[in-house]
Image 1 (tube, chains in turn brown, green):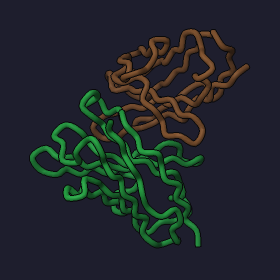
Image 2 (cartoon, chains in turn red, yellow):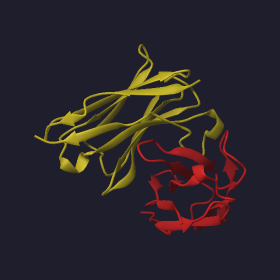
Image 3 (spheres, chains in turn blue, yellow):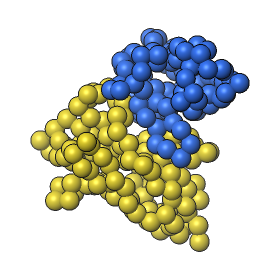
Image 4 (cartoon, helix red, strand yellow):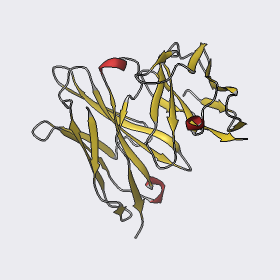
Length: 107
Length: 125
């Protein structure tokens, strides 16, 4: 089975900072990687799909990249609304696995 | 605007069956492009995909290994909704349950582009 390891689990940053979250898969997952943002008491919202494609309405300060087994989500110029928990998610024929989450906190 | 409206009880007794419904507005459960999913979230298990149903000239069903044998997802075309049934529940099944869609814009990518608001389900006597 594929294992997903997301890091860091917690990240402290300030408004205006650039931050990067990493997701590593235990085997190659091609380009089937998505990223979500979740705020307390709310459902996750899709940010990025297929590694680097922005979902509808998502600001351009969010970007994704990666290939093979290592993928990243970068937020350039943090805004107050960005402090939330972020999850990666992989997809293949057999499973749809989420990472454990990264909580982005205000420093 | 497409929306998913969840309904169902928030408390289920151990060994009984958890039943939830997701009503679709602005899209069709019989869509030849979308797939209709159930996902749950708990502190111990994180976000966990449970299964999906979709229509491509006939109905298809896929379930996660972790719940296979206990889970059923059914579409209802007359009501334009789909349901989740999870049998023989235990405290481990306590979670927030979400319905979610993989729609046209992300078709084939496995990304969930629309989510319901979530239903908190507690398994307790």
